[in-house]
Length: 119
Image 1 (cartoon, helix red, strand yellow):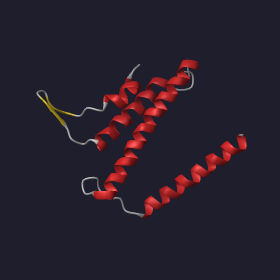
Image 2 (image 1 turned 60 degrees about the vertical axis):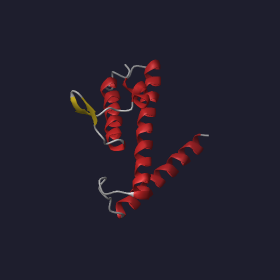
Image 3 (image 1 turned 90 degrees about the vertical axis):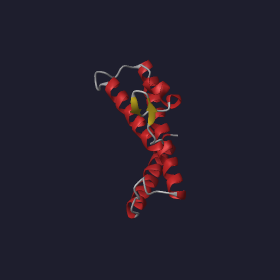
Image 4 (image 1 turned 120 degrees about the vertical axis):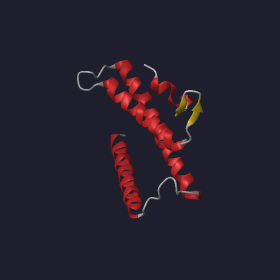
């Protein structure tokens, strides 16, 4: 079982490195100029990365219920930094500002960040 997990890890690492090198060969188009299939694919990747960040926060919270890692790291700062990254990706996914009487502001999707921002 352990050998299978290790081999899976290396397979995923190899696939990621191949994807990164393939992406480096292609010049990325600025978000404002992206359109069609490329834009849809990019938004899908960004949305998945946001959901994976939120899943990482939830997994971290499960670990915090068992053990407090504050002797080795600032758990709250680490958690907050991930929540902030998820909010930044939300700006990429929904770049339209929300108009209000107090001015223009960005609102993250609370359905996705509700668990991540609690504490």
